[in-house]
Length: 333
Image (tube, rainbow, N blue to C red; front, side, top):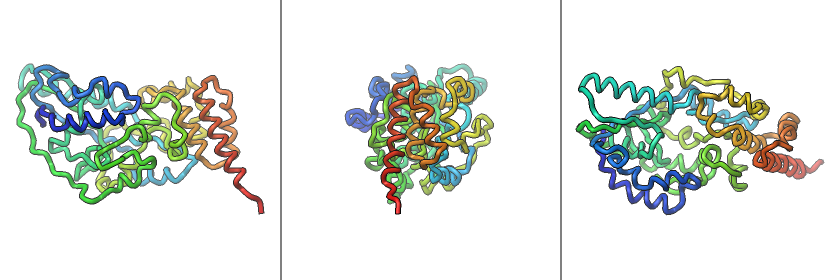
């Protein structure tokens, strides 16, 4: 349980926006400080019920192994199953209704990435855990591989006593970030973050980041995968988060061959679906550009060299140039 006075977080949010760290996510600036003022989002709110739900369906060790296999397509662990927005929202609604059955009618609204709410800030004021240096919430017993959701309510509930942080001198998340997006402890420049670049960004991925993306075609988990606290991460028991379409073992070439119809049919109901087929191909083209120069990889890229999308064509051209450059640097004995 948390109160609604988040005023101490307002300056940090204001500075983050002023620095432009939100990139092209205009909605972040649009809502501004409203994110730190729950009562403006839902008038009458006096308490927030913060909850989390584990999502791991695959051993983190296998994810680290995949990062070392450039022909494989790495997809953020949270996106391997059903779209969490739907799952978590339904669970929150069911809980809110159970509370109503116990205490009688009351005012509430459930949120899970569906409105301008500072989920991590709220959760860090409860027994859920503390904000890690990568800006995500950490829990001593379960790491950070979980979703957060909130129920804003007019029930006057007693707030928890916040936990202290336990990152200490560890800076592993900062050190392993492929694009150095964590510019300082607890400060993320989204414009450099692979999750932003492959999911939120609609246009071309900046050239400087393409080689650093590696085989990460949807999101990035490095700051979590290498966090010492995630040795305590627990697998999810939610069937909706089970891996779909073999996405935990898929190759870049295989996914790049999907038609738009196949993309829509196979990924309907997943978080990946919302970026659309064009950006999916854009991301895969970058991954293929970073893969080994095999006949299969080169053939896959050539197959879309004249794609209808200018965005896809440009990234395919970059990928082919990467392979051509690599071949030119091979000096025969």
